[in-house]
Image 1 (cartoon, each protein chain N blue to C red):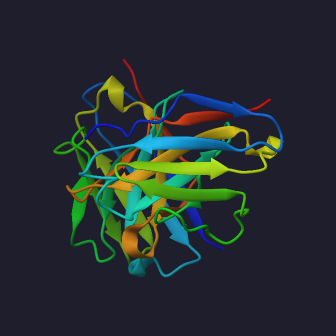
Image 2 (cartoon, rainbow over the protein chains, first blue to last red):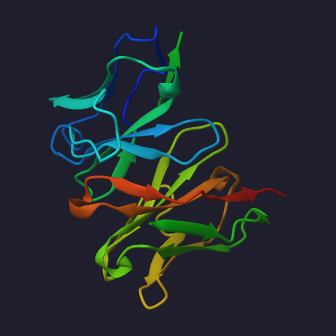
Length: 110
Length: 119
């Protein structure tokens, strides 16, 4: 199972919006709602930010939103803040009943 | 409060074996699937294995299938990962993660235990 493809890095100024893409195949992202996104600041464990494509767990700011079109899922951070600086990973369920993560994206707040 | 505490990570030689444990608390352990996820130093997350709530169904990544075995003891609220035939590629921080209802996410994570495979 190959990792889902994410851009290595994205950046934006405070207050701007950034979008991270997550491209898979019809055997994973394209076929299931079980797509999720994780935030991982340096030296910490991952934290779920979006589950089932577009749902936010309680406590996650509404600046974070998720969507999906075809084989590509996206995470958008609106109103970028300094505390959003971290690595972000997508994940999807697959047709083999396994899971796969994305390659990861480093978000930098300029 | 949900807590997941991993243990068992050590330095082991190539070809060796190791058993990781994860102690869970703060939720009905026997109601949820559980996962192991690993992260090699300086690299991204890799899903390793999952086990159903009753322990009757397991799945593993191709890279570990046949070498790693996931198991659980619901009477002890504990998750395990038996790792055999270890190679240097298995060096990583190993996280225990709780599966969310419906399998849509890994909603709680431990802090990880470090496995180093080195001669």
